[in-house]
Image (cartoon, rainbow, N blue to C red; front, side, top):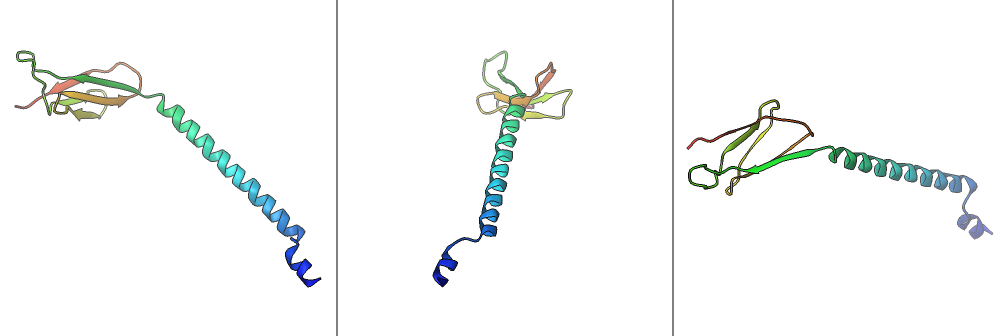
Length: 100
């Protein structure tokens, strides 16, 4: 009889487990929603990319600076002269400079 009392869950314990399950489901739902919003927000980003080459020789200009004039972002061309910038969709003026 004492053993039956120990192994049988009390109604308050069952209720507590149900509340925990509901809480976990809510947390899981919130995480899924946040991941969906993050994915949607990342889809609103465009990209400006290109390759910088020396006009007279056709050689890539590694280390050339690329700056978007209206924003405070920029990058440097890689060894092959390639660059890439993530920006919101729109029209921009790109300034390229190189110090030899």
